[in-house]
Structures are given as C-alpha cells and as structure tokens.
Length: 197
Image 1 (cartoon, rainbow, N blue to C red):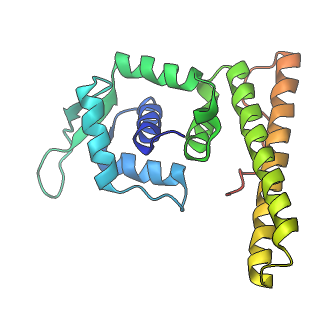
Image 2: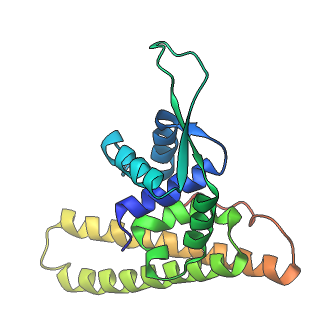
C-alpha cells in the first residue's frame, strides 16, 4: 500500500506539470482529485511540499501578484528532477499502482502514461477488485443469516459497488486494447465516471 505522502507527492508533481501553482491552488486541485472522502489538509500538504523542496523535486518562487495581505505568495514549480521522478513513479507497475490509495491519482494522469503501463495498472486493479469481490460475496453468503437486514444490505451495497467498478475497468481495458490494435493515439473513448468505492 502506498504511503499517503507518496500519493500526495505524485499528485503534486502531476499537477505542477500543468504549470506553477501556489499552495492554496494545489490543495484545492488535490481535494478535487482525491474526492470528497479524502480531504487533504494544509497539515498534510505543506510537510510534503517541504520534503519535495529538500529533494529538489520542486522549487519555489515568489509570485508578483499583489494580494490583500501584501505578502508575496509562494508559487511552486516542478524541477527537472521532479519531472524524472514523476515519470519514474508513473511507469511503476505493481500492487502500489492499483491499490485504493494510489489508483485514482495514477488514473488522473494516465494521459501522460504509455498504453502498456496503463493496461497493466488497469488489469492489476481489476484483478485486485475481483479478489475483493469474491471474498465479500463469500462472506455475504456466510453471514446473511447471522446479521440483521441493515448489515446485510450494507454488504450487498459493497458488492454492487465493486461489481460496478470491475465492469468499468473491463470497459477501459477493452477500449485501451482497441486503441492499441488500431494504432490510434489519444485518450480512450469517453466512459462513465469512475465509481466511488
């Protein structure tokens, strides 16, 4: 499982490839990316930014824009070392790439990833979710008679959510393979948004 700091680093590097940003904008964009269930505080963001500055992955400059407080705003931008680290992280395939904590961030930057890597990550995620689905379905059939109807309903909801994401991943994998066979560049066809699990 990826550490939260590593996930934030990957997201920051990806966002800064779009252009320099100040901390407030980074936090806002990260919260949109992470989703409503994983709100990022400044207490998590700024230590990560300081670590990335020490590692020369990003650098700071002072914004010339006049602010209400008249204090110059610090703007962060990716360095050459940060670009290489982002490329390295995005090329990794393995369990950390498809776990819950990291998959959404990686998926958000798939447009900058080789198709073979995208396929391996999508397939790994689908296998992991299928394993989870099989386990939850076994547990559901064993405990349905032992738990009250609300607990059983919650378990059924979990099964349906995972089944929906497995179907979504299968559609994405098929779209990627189709693009690979036709040699067409670009993003996969528009599909429904990723379900929240």
